[in-house]
Image (tube, helix red, strand yellow):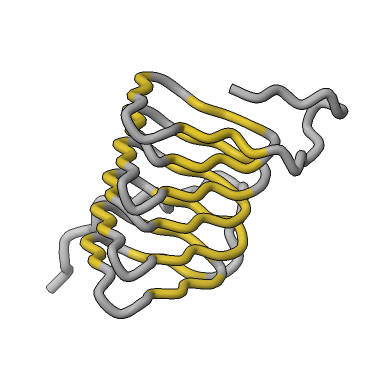
Length: 135
């Protein structure tokens, strides 16, 4: 994997390529771009872009600024800005993004939520048992 020499947490223009025929089990993270033409069994995190090529396979969660899917992804996909499902994409899982682009032929099976993503924890109202009706 390519390493960046810039400040920790800063975005990088470097690209890490997981080539066709390469299989990775575990978490992958980068401040730069990631391109997957091989197979990843685990989560991917990038402060830039993640591209899953036509032959790429990911089984796990993907978190990035922008995500392009051209292959098979099984899991949750969270793009802070834009998610593109190319014509040969097959996404089995939920997606969260501000902007969604779906090309003709793309397959998607899951739930989608669009809009500004908040990094806050959702709180659920605690329901109290209702009192019996009085006659």
